[in-house]
Image (cartoon, rainbow, N blue to C red; front, side, top):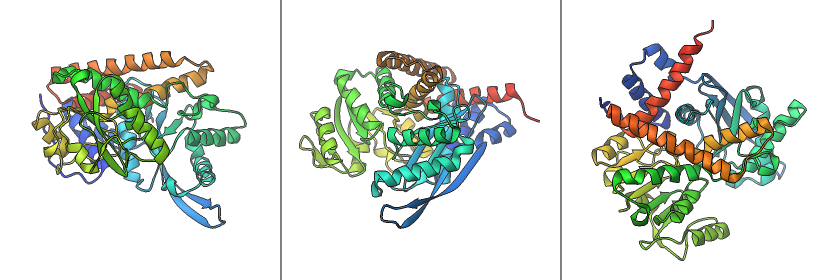
Length: 422
């Protein structure tokens, strides 16, 4: 059967997440009561975070932590620092995290957190104070057996080190398993920093043959040159793909002959942006999504492929490095144009897979080599790709609906087996 495409207009990432869930529920034939349970977070915490600025003045921020589901294990999800953070965005990201963990068979439920702050406007000392206060405010609901945060947009391994230390001081002993994405010196995993990017490229390369493509003859554009996009561009280039365009929040560059990705990385390290890179021409950031390339990797933020620009997308394959970059309306348009979309809960799941590996290593106090981490990650990603592809073909579904249905079915099964209390 082929489930009908959504015809409603999306207002937010949460609308998109709920529409995807509703489609999976219809495919699976789940009862309405179970649907409502899966659509509703189990716990939400909103806190105020006062900050003493370096100049002695005071500021105040709002932070959230949403725990969507616990049926398959403790909650898991990143912490985002962005001026655009709001509760509905965090709810959507937490829900997608539940499906991501279930699809990759990682024994977690989904969670997400965020603080509404632009970290570029604050010193390292101020960000440390924000992080420690936020951690102390959500302390009752996090922990290695309860909810394990990780980095996301605007946060990094230093943020996780501050979180781990704050939690450990409150506990009276060091608790490395309370967060993942930590510095290796503090119990982080080798391979964690590049894991999401590697997973995206593992799946992208596996998907190329389905479009009659091979790396040496494939062109690619990558939207976003941060945690995910930068590594994805590098690994695609190393695999022989010709990366012709990349963008960040400041602008974009294009070179039809192929960008020198290592040189671009050096330029970004020196200047903070891809803008003015000598090896490429200036490109409007939005135009990158519409370039005539084989592979498009949206690896920035939610909702960039919409009903407005989807008809102009010319890529044959879209691999979602970001969470929720494609609205349901855009999904339907891309499908109608025979553009294959590899969904976020599959494509960018490498980060949570290696976060799981890091958590396992911390709990065992035994660390793996980088080659072991990368081999186990690739095995997980390719196994999930094959399973989703087979399910989609068997049920005549899109890859997104197939992936969501598989994940929802696993979470629903776990919930049903556990039963309701009381």
